[in-house]
Length: 408
Image 1 (cartoon, rainbow, N blue to C red):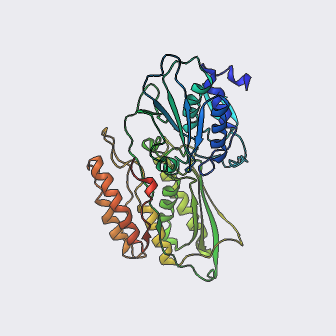
Image 2 (image 1 turned 60 degrees about the vertical axis):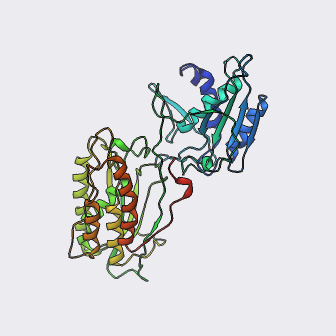
Image 3 (image 1 turned 135 degrees about the horizontal axis):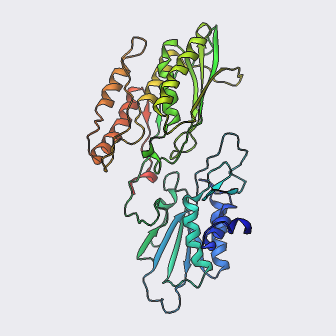
């Protein structure tokens, strides 16, 4: 650690605290250990510290001499991190510490996310506990739980816990800038009824369709960079190959609701005489999409291979396959409207087809209503209405919006 610190800029005290919390697994829904560690950290340095029922930690740092009459200021960050790793990484986020490395001028992790969101903010606040040479008024350090999965800790913070008159959130994205607002967010869960066959039809080959090599990224910080959404891209490819009358068994991709999917797997059953044509069709559209995304996704790779998995689920029937592909293909993704004048991401419209149900026509009508000239507020409201509508068209039901994910 000492050798690594010499390569990092001052103040080293922040890096020391960041390294300390990086040794403790702290993925979302796994913040109990880091919370307990922070409480002990505060108490060991003579501060009042407590953990509430929601798993949040509050550390109260006394004012410097002569500053006792200043208003109380709260420095707030969140303890949990997004857990993403390279495909070939053996890292276990539930047990392993984050391994640091320096690449050029950047501190990075070894084939995993670094956890600087929001570890570096927590570390900056922790410095006020250990460095009493810093002059300040009374401070409250608030470290919330499970921010990355819906602001859960913040939503569970009780009234009267904080005494501060001012709060500074240490989870911003730009250097030398102060963020004075937040767009907020919500989580919507949908269930689409799918009918599975009791047995695999004769003369069908199970194919593994694997899209990898995408950048991924944070759905808030990186969404305007037009990185490829792996689920959307793979479904778009499968839509192109629907004339091969494959049957969907499963699609799996993405690791968190706020991480852009970088890798996706689909298992489909294809009529054996059409395997070559199915593969060629997917590779052809993958090549076209590769050119479309060449500047932002130069390492995208599609692999289509036959496989034999005894544990694979039975295939959906043809109507359910079409319904699932159309639903995923039509859901909006990316920037729809930018207040700064940026263009929205292109939306795929599902054309009518003799091989599909009448639902795609209505899907297309719904998406066309999302005009690119809507103001931000109107576009946001329209998306909230569009999701349930698309779910209904697909024959599904939509669960009530999570209360913990309401706008902040």
